[in-house]
Image (cartoon, rainbow, N blue to C red; front, side, top):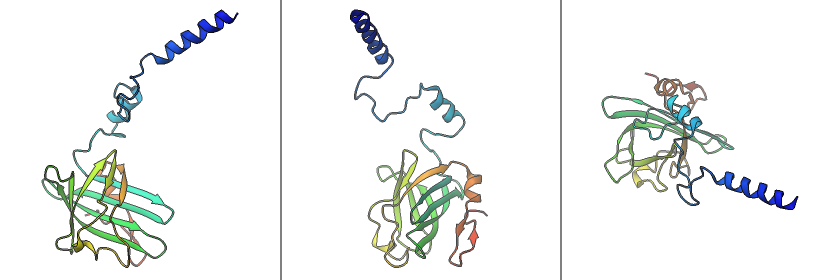
Length: 182
């Protein structure tokens, strides 16, 4: 009986290794042969890379909700609205334009409205938009008090322009509005 157990264990071990990539090869890579992955990509639930930034980036956390909507605003240009929560009564809401960044600088370049010189390169990796950890000094007045958008990370919630236009954020008066609806 022990020999049969040993053979059974050996056969199961061999089967377990079938079709698996070699250890360390492609760690973190996406298996596009996976039927679930293919179906999600075909339906727009998951995208390999966003060629257009339009959509919604959003994250809820203990201190509130951070959200950004991005909609087209002409050829090769988009506009955005962004809100970040830093606790009760402290939030940062801003808007501006977004264009494709120059090569080697990052994927997108945000220019914040009403703040000359406050331009930052942002990148989208693994369906998450990441602002740099340090912003130019011209961006110091974007947020009230000690709040800052430096290092803000927003996961992509949607690639849909319609969703971006429907996104609601709270204004300074507490009323909700749709900053990207126009």
